[in-house]
Length: 358
Image (cartoon, rainbow, N blue to C red; front, side, top):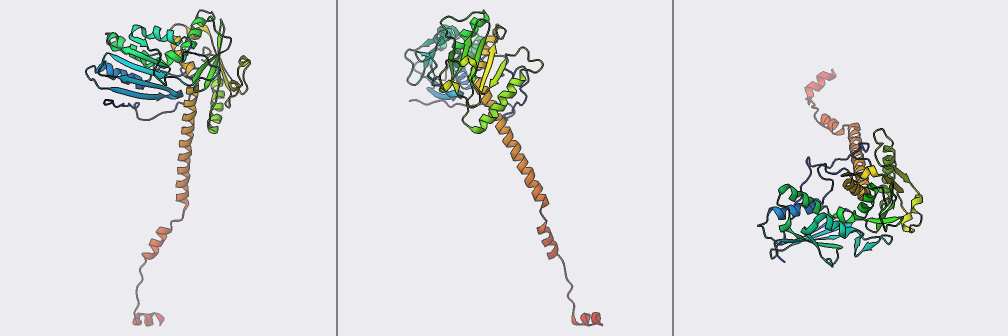
């Protein structure tokens, strides 16, 4: 194996992770806020590797990089100087639960979605590399010559997670935009979004209902997530949120989950139901809606962890202020000792002593 390139990471401006405490803004309710310029949310690791490879074509260094994203999505990028025009990209998806159906290791519609998104630039290798669900051979010589179009394509390639995992949901929502139901789709569709966990989709001609069983391992996360989700539902009722998708939370499984397996009916943080109407998937809204719905659990987990970190910071500051108050309340014993030791005494002789006594 030849030398491997190092991976660098760029911190956000300001050097701090800031917590958003207001979820009543239009961008936050019902979806994750993504880049305003791109409707997709690409993997920054993938995008940086691809940009470095394309922008430095003369740097023929062997490349073998692994990356793991949230919800256990893994990437493997390989490049060899022996074939400088090709780059291999392998993707491993979360382990699907029993109720989720995969075709050749991929969600239904994923192969068609990859071909439609990347065209002749990408060739799907069958079978994929061991341990991965999808392996693509990228022909770098077929990238668009225009710099802006080339960058746009690389962003799309770095969004392969959304293209593959979101393929079934995209098919269902595309038919919703035309007020039809996708053919050969069950009444209740289970889609994987986390390892051995799925969310459920109920497709109809006039609406699509999505049910998320919310599960967390840490007991503190369960309490915070339950509180957050209840506030999330209340935010939908505020003024200005009339166009946001209707959202409900319940501690028990909704009626739409009748017929689901026993594991799907257990959730320690309750169930969230979101209803999508045709107006939510019109035109360019489709990409953003698919990504927001696909990563809803990650969105909630992010805010739960931010809330937990915020409360820990507040508690530490409170403890520090109490310690300062206790320090101020202590008697200044050291100062009093110094004052006592600093006193001076005049030594009297025998004559002075007799005169004072007389």
